[in-house]
Image 1: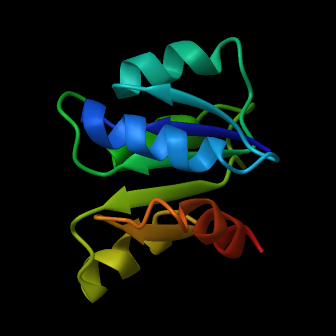
Image 2 (image 1 turned 135 degrees about the vertical axis):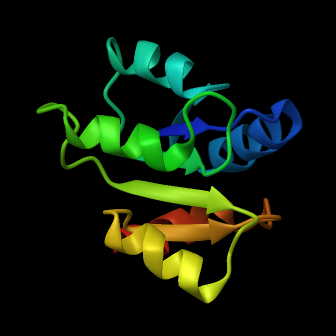
Length: 120
């Protein structure tokens, strides 16, 4: 499974990449911004995108909306990763088309399993 992880925080991005790469079925690429992610998506088609909600420039929900306008990525499963995990916010993310939300701080040892469970 090809996973794109987008987060502006280098430490979190590195932890997520290491955690997801421990799963032999996951091929992981990371991006430090929405612009970086859009550049990667021109050449590499992931099976799922994990997007940080709060990023400078274009945030995660705006990036998801941009993906939905693309014929190639209109149905790409998106999982938001956020410290803003209040019930009302979680509902808002799911009504915008995300398949799930992973709260920060996440457990690196169970991150891959969390992704699998959301995608089931």
